[in-house]
Length: 115
Image (cartoon, rainbow, N blue to C red; front, side, top):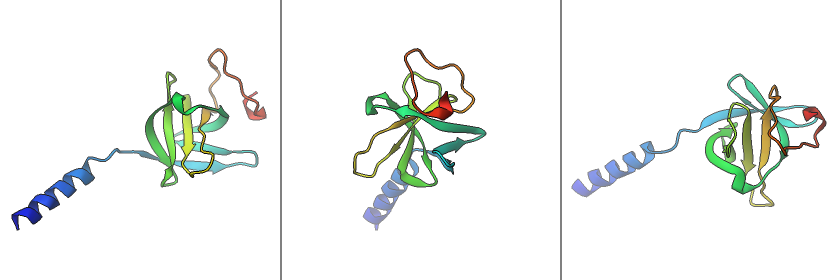
């Protein structure tokens, strides 16, 4: 009985120690899928590298494979990264908050909604 209680205690502690991720929402438009987080809308800006991903901060529509991450060295209020784990050609995408006008030097986007 003591072993059982000990194991149950360990399982409880492990389940409570998980990371709290914000559940964000996708917004589909005619041209792209945006991400809504609180009162901000993030639009696709450009493909990115995994090495540019920071800490995971959320998931989209409750899908644990659809992760949202901080973009290294950029404020999350203006920039985030989306990374969907499908197992096939997974690559992250940099998203810009739609009202952001301060674009870091060297950043470019080929998408018309960013120009």
